[in-house]
Image (cartoon, rainbow, N blue to C red; front, side, top):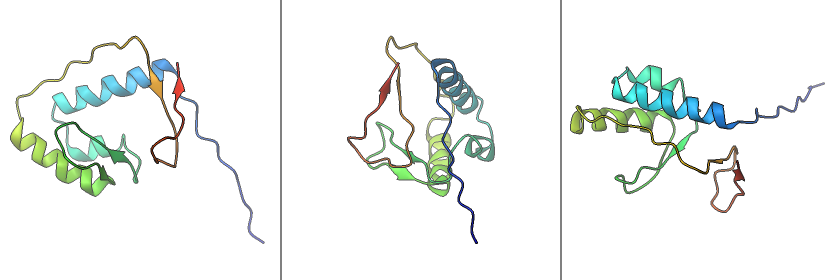
Length: 103
Protein backbone atom coordinates (compact mmCIF):
# COMPACT_ATOMS: atom_id res chain seq x y z
CA UNK A 1 0.00 0.00 0.00
CA UNK A 2 1.40 3.41 -0.98
CA UNK A 3 1.79 6.13 1.58
CA UNK A 4 0.98 9.72 0.67
CA UNK A 5 2.71 12.57 2.45
CA UNK A 6 1.51 16.14 2.06
CA UNK A 7 4.32 18.68 1.97
CA UNK A 8 3.66 22.34 2.62
CA UNK A 9 6.18 24.73 1.07
CA UNK A 10 7.90 27.01 3.55
CA UNK A 11 6.48 30.47 4.04
CA UNK A 12 8.82 33.14 2.77
CA UNK A 13 9.32 36.20 4.89
CA UNK A 14 10.76 39.55 3.83
CA UNK A 15 14.28 38.70 5.03
CA UNK A 16 14.35 35.44 3.07
CA UNK A 17 13.24 37.19 -0.12
CA UNK A 18 15.75 40.03 0.30
CA UNK A 19 18.54 37.51 0.89
CA UNK A 20 17.57 35.49 -2.18
CA UNK A 21 17.44 38.59 -4.40
CA UNK A 22 20.76 39.88 -3.05
CA UNK A 23 22.45 36.48 -3.44
CA UNK A 24 21.05 36.09 -6.96
CA UNK A 25 22.33 39.43 -8.23
CA UNK A 26 25.66 39.08 -6.45
CA UNK A 27 26.06 35.70 -8.15
CA UNK A 28 25.24 37.09 -11.59
CA UNK A 29 27.49 40.13 -11.07
CA UNK A 30 30.34 37.80 -10.11
CA UNK A 31 29.59 35.63 -13.17
CA UNK A 32 29.43 32.46 -11.11
CA UNK A 33 29.25 29.20 -13.05
CA UNK A 34 25.75 28.44 -14.28
CA UNK A 35 25.56 25.30 -12.12
CA UNK A 36 25.80 27.43 -8.97
CA UNK A 37 22.93 29.61 -10.16
CA UNK A 38 20.86 26.58 -11.14
CA UNK A 39 21.12 25.41 -7.52
CA UNK A 40 19.02 28.46 -6.58
CA UNK A 41 16.23 27.50 -9.00
CA UNK A 42 13.43 24.97 -9.05
CA UNK A 43 13.78 22.49 -11.93
CA UNK A 44 10.49 23.67 -13.44
CA UNK A 45 11.00 27.37 -12.76
CA UNK A 46 9.55 30.00 -15.10
CA UNK A 47 11.42 33.29 -15.67
CA UNK A 48 10.40 36.48 -17.37
CA UNK A 49 12.84 39.26 -18.21
CA UNK A 50 11.88 42.64 -19.68
CA UNK A 51 14.44 42.34 -22.50
CA UNK A 52 13.42 38.79 -23.51
CA UNK A 53 10.24 38.43 -25.57
CA UNK A 54 8.92 35.17 -24.13
CA UNK A 55 9.19 33.68 -20.63
CA UNK A 56 11.28 30.54 -20.45
CA UNK A 57 10.76 27.46 -18.32
CA UNK A 58 13.18 24.99 -16.78
CA UNK A 59 16.85 24.97 -15.97
CA UNK A 60 18.04 23.96 -19.48
CA UNK A 61 16.39 27.11 -20.88
CA UNK A 62 17.95 29.18 -18.09
CA UNK A 63 21.41 27.80 -18.89
CA UNK A 64 21.03 28.87 -22.52
CA UNK A 65 19.79 32.31 -21.54
CA UNK A 66 22.59 32.82 -19.00
CA UNK A 67 25.24 31.95 -21.61
CA UNK A 68 23.71 34.46 -24.05
CA UNK A 69 23.47 37.17 -21.39
CA UNK A 70 27.10 36.69 -20.31
CA UNK A 71 28.25 36.96 -23.91
CA UNK A 72 26.23 40.13 -24.50
CA UNK A 73 26.49 41.97 -21.17
CA UNK A 74 29.70 40.64 -19.66
CA UNK A 75 30.65 43.83 -17.76
CA UNK A 76 27.17 44.80 -16.63
CA UNK A 77 26.63 45.17 -12.88
CA UNK A 78 23.27 45.00 -11.11
CA UNK A 79 22.39 46.93 -8.00
CA UNK A 80 19.43 45.97 -5.82
CA UNK A 81 17.24 48.86 -4.71
CA UNK A 82 14.90 48.25 -1.80
CA UNK A 83 11.23 48.50 -2.68
CA UNK A 84 8.70 49.87 -0.23
CA UNK A 85 6.27 47.04 -0.85
CA UNK A 86 7.26 43.43 -1.25
CA UNK A 87 5.13 40.91 -3.13
CA UNK A 88 5.80 37.25 -2.40
CA UNK A 89 4.12 34.37 -4.12
CA UNK A 90 4.74 30.65 -3.84
CA UNK A 91 2.87 28.35 -6.10
CA UNK A 92 3.25 25.21 -8.09
CA UNK A 93 0.64 26.81 -10.38
CA UNK A 94 2.28 29.75 -12.18
CA UNK A 95 -0.95 30.70 -13.96
CA UNK A 96 -1.73 34.42 -14.22
CA UNK A 97 -4.26 35.76 -11.79
CA UNK A 98 -3.12 33.57 -8.92
CA UNK A 99 -3.29 35.62 -5.69
CA UNK A 100 0.00 36.98 -4.36
CA UNK A 101 0.51 37.53 -0.67
CA UNK A 102 1.52 41.11 0.16
CA UNK A 103 3.97 41.91 2.96
